Amino acid sequence: MTEPEELHADDVQQHLKEVQDLLARQKVVEGLVHRQDMPRHELVENLVHKQHEAGLRAKLDSLHPADIAYILEALPREERLYVWDLVKAERDGEILLEVSDAVRESLIETMDPEELKAAAGSLDADELADLAPDLPPEVIEDVFQSLDSEGREQLRAAMSYPEDSVGALMDFDMVTVRDDVTLEVVLRYLRRFDELPDHTDKLFVVDREDHLEGILTLETLLISDPEKTVAEVMRSEPVISFTPEDEADDAAQAFERYDLVSAPVIDSERRVIGRITVADAVDFIREESEAEILSQAGLREEEDIFASVWSSVKNRWAWLAINLVTAFVASRVIGLFEESIEKLVALAALMPIVAGIGGNSGNQTVTMIVRAIAMGQVEPSAMTRLLRKELGVALINGVVWGGLLGVLAWWLYGNVDLGLVMTGAMTLNLLLAACAGVLVPMLRQRLGADPALGGSVMITALTDSGGFFIFLGLATLFLL
Image 1 (cartoon, helix red, strand yellow):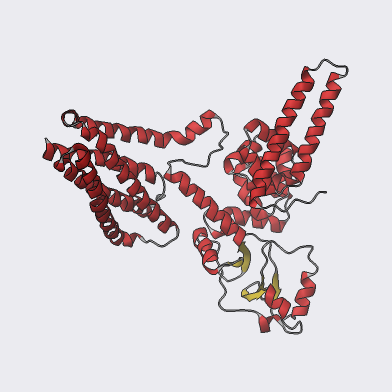
Image 2: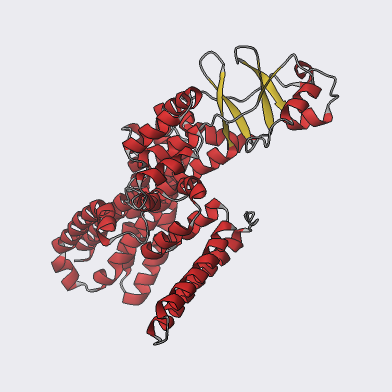
């Protein structure tokens, strides 16, 4: 079997291009053959098809599952399903774990129950738990029955924890040793493995009841005297460990803060029941970041860019409806000042500036606050302090940049009062943006909602309507 290639980041794009070229060439050549009037036309067409198919299979066989997942996500649905059919069946499970949720759903729809069972059966319990929500119940039941008692218990445990907990991230593939054996015995024990679990940088030292006593790093194991016992060289304090109920977000931050590669997961009696690795932490951080970006744009879930029109509409309509309402409100605010705009046409040219700058400033603030909340740096009790600080920033920016715009308005329209109104409106709208940027995500956090969900949409709505009202209201009061 061909070994998967070692790839650099840039190579993934190159391999995507090569697959796309192979698909395009296959269509062109088969089209030409199909149009030719020759003996044994179907035989020639079949040979050409098999030749191109063999080239694609060989290409896919050489790639890592994560890179195949990337290629599948980048292909239109028809080509994606064709390429998916060419992937070796024993790799289906790994690839399904790597693709996005939306694309995974489109692939699973094309697989019959037996294919799904085979794909799921090739996975470890923790991996199967990740895939289980997308599989038909009867497939999960059959796979569950095919596991041994230990596998069933692990799968049941992995599926029992909330999605955002350490228990949902942990895996059960780990190496434990006793503290009363020598390092030579440990080395002989490790040589019995065909390969160590991924990201094994330390062994967990346990007693007869699997209680955690310390850790033995591979570095210590290799450089220490083989005649020494594990107890003599292991590190017992401090050992960073987690419980299954801990927040996955807290664990991910700990991995980043302490540069961890792996860490034990223990139960209430300090028995080692699993471990969490840097790969799990990185995957969680990436998924959270993607979810945050989507939430800020008002999208409920990740979207397959080649999904059907109706699927995309369902994912986007809710916040677009809210946008429609807020845009209507903004238009009615402008409508209240139609007479003012008719008397001073310059107002129509200047009011989008006030609203636009306010929206940008508010989005800067909400992005910073949401990021701080996600990293656990902000507690709800800090709201007043943050609000005071952001109002100070907004006031200075309003006076400086609002003053500059006021001077420009004075220069363009020869009206000092218009310049002063511009400065005042800019300052007030930036203060409004600062308040909204702090209060919207923090109040949502306090109410137990996602602080990022629709943040930019709400900020833009407030600063648009508020900016128009403030600017046109001040102009009506002082200029007309």
